[in-house]
Length: 301
Image (cartoon, rainbow, N blue to C red; front, side):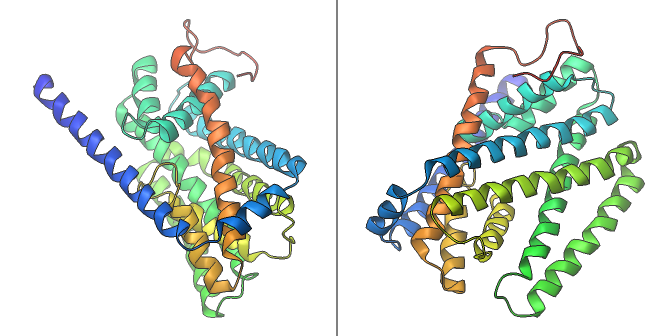
């Protein structure tokens, strides 16, 4: 049974990878045909590198907070990872998600490894990872609702987004309490950290805007970023590349913004993600977890 299942699993992963590559290339082709590369290059040449470095730091902080949030849900199922182990495992997961789209995903790797290491059911580790993702989406939804009032949108849109974001909170809590009561303790800290993650990434985008000399009052760019972050959650492209730029391009046209600036902000954010995620490749060759089991080691990489 296993021998016949493995080729099928490999084929599905290959098809999934080829699909993501195809959609990514299609989006990039579409976007590249609708921007002026000379203008984009000129804007990039004038970019302030100190702001780009600060944007990189802001993104790293967002990922550290995100990893701490995930560990809260792991501890709800008695997976006793130290923060150091958890951080290394989280970074390895980012590397898998971005650089190995046809292989095992970062989330699946964490589920398999922790299930074997701590002897907890697959259902529990899978639920912890998924609930962590949902808590992140809740934080994203709340900030999206906030920034929808700053973007030049029809009055009904911010109201609809705010109502949807507001209703998602009690809905998520009800699902936790009804079907996953063991994860209820992680609801509030998970939500708070989810908001902090999105705030750190919003700061990252503000710094990218500053690097390109875009006024911080142009909050429509932040709104587009939050929308693109929600869309990039869909497993359609490699690390959100292409689909995020497409959202920025279409949004720039809708809001009357410079297409080159919008796409450049999006692309720089992807480069930041790429640089930070690449660090996780170290743990492909070096075990992210301690050999002797959980420890109280300090937060190091």
